[in-house]
Amino acid sequence: MKYWKFIWIIAALVHQSTPAVTAKEPLPATPLFRIEETLVSYHDTGTKDYLAFPAIIALGNNEIMISYKRGRQHARDPGAELEIIRFDLASGRQTQEPIQIGLPNAIMQMGEWIRFPNGDLATYIDVQKIDEEGQHYRTGLMRAIRSESDQRFGKLEKVGPIEGVEYGYLFDSVTIGQRLYALMMTFEYLAGERRTVDVLYTDDNGDTWHFLRNLSQEFGDIRINESSFIPFENGFIVATRGYDEKQRLHKVDSRFRLLSETTLTDESPTISSYLGRPRLFSHDGEFFLIGRNHRAPKRAIPMELALIRFDPGSLAIEEQYVLDNSERGDVTDGYYPSPIIVDTGKRKLLNVIDYKAILGNSPDIIRLQFDMESFLP
Image (tube, rainbow, N blue to C red; front, side, top):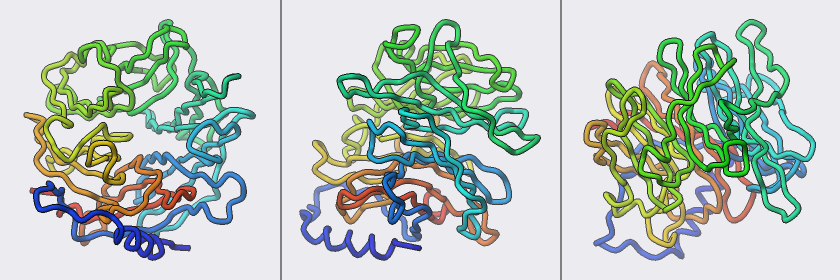
């Protein structure tokens, strides 16, 4: 059942009560072509109706797997599971029954996909529990592997310490030849006793991992959290979300040594804080950053889904877009986007799999579609 018409009606009503845009206020562009649909609805799903934090992996033939949290609230909800569906982007239909992965009294807060060079898929899960004071803490990364040979997920297993450090949250991965690099975050209460984002790599499809670089230290001893990276020339570009409310882009060499960087929150008046769950992608030689944005200080404008096209050489912003909530509706939670570009034969569409809650209700898992040509110079 589709709910996009209802969402836009509500958004329009809420928009009527929001302040008018002044002539001096800088406005990002809004794409002309747009479709929104609900993939998984929170309606009539029982007690675990909080659906959030989707991540995707391409399977070929316009099919993807989508994982997302199925729980009771944004965080601190023991028993929350990671749910996985297979989805056909062309027909807009699920092609298998959902799979749930979980542990008693644990929270499967975030899952992130990895495709190893041998074809195996794995979901690396940010597993959390609640302490006696009601605070959440990471128990250490766990994973479930889907073998290329039998197409089934194996048992949930703990990754364990890597060269004396245990990690709690995996953000992103890139494969170069037979080597796979990943960004992982560790926490001061886990083995290693530090809170940093590190680069690790594996040459044997995840059987063993090796430490390469502490990015928090390399980027000037900054405290960072959610990060993304993408190959560029002989190195990479890394996007980091700072605890200092800054969103940065860093250019690094093949060993992740810093070459140059820029702070987008200082460069743009319409990025007032970090981007929530930033992700980098490229298309037709152009580079993009997507994530949740608060355009005005102190969140005076409701959260939006932002897309930024930037120059990979200078790291300067070339264009900024509002993909969702330009109407300033009451979006109360959402926007951890996973982008994928789909070739329909007639046009190339940017598909964004995301989650979105309005008016304080639980979120839906949604798909937004845009003509990719509208984002190219």
